[in-house]
Length: 466
Image 1 (cartoon, rainbow, N blue to C red):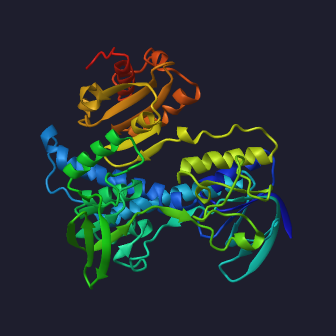
Image 2: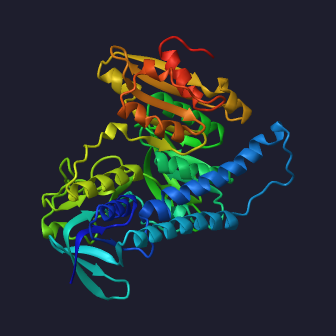
Image 3: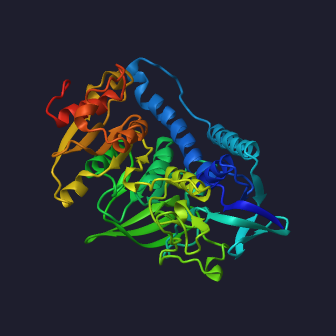
């Protein structure tokens, strides 16, 4: 039986990154993946293919709605869905091959098959051909990710009632689609198919979309998406769902009102649940929460000190970039190196609609609830030269600064490349750059990033362009 310093179950963003970092630190590493390809949900059926379709559909929608008014005349504009899907698959394939290469480059042993714990240091690998093999590992990292959550009152997933994986693979454009859940997955995939011609209805139990984001961000994004043709049923509960040959009929209730909605497809996008199937956690004695997450301490150790859990298996934001950070951290810890605890408040949250929406740090509502004094600065893309030149002058950036010490507390926004602006704002928090210092940083002109500085200026009543 082969013995490794580190055995990793799951090759998603947390698992494969942990494997690479552990190998870089001189450890002998094995990674076990139940699917035929490495990369996990994010690379194969999540983040990457969805962003490919979001980009392609956005190009089409931009050409359809804005080319003519800008003097760009295209006759008979149309798309080929088969080619769109082929392009999406090509992107995924290229990145999967990239992960394969990185495993070989770093000397990581790859096993394909369902991994399960036989005892605290032995992993059984059930191979697709029916064979089995066992490996031993001095340290084990559980990184098996998550799966789409279902709803008990709906039929199991099928051709009509689908999860996010199926919604990335439609062979034709649905006539209509109900999206249950107004979070990132629902809004992104709803946007893709809305742009391509589907009538999209978003049903949300709560009173607003993306409810964990800053309220001004979610309300502004909702307005933009409504203007794009997406219809919202907020504060709405689904009573029943009935499937016929060509439609699904949903019965909805919102306060005293009831509705009947007939659609071709229903996308269930109500979040994800930890994927612990087959790991044998209970048999081994690894503690889990009532919601099925693996219990860990501040260093991602389970109740077995040499068995770690990261990413979607652990309570917290189910985000690929969070899993990557945890994978690196655990690899460092196993190698005996010190690694600072992660500040989860500083993990960016992004929704890749058009315009994009996102934020980092405290929301304005959180500061108000904590009765914390703060300054607020806001700048709109409609006054930004680069945004206007590209006809993307929609949305705003908002910065929240501590009124006493000028510490930046939060940055939120809706608009073009918000994902990049929010991501590159992370060092402002980690390096504790205060608002006063930030306004003096040199930024290239004209760039969209100038909106962020203009917002900071506005927090001190020094705005130049508004």
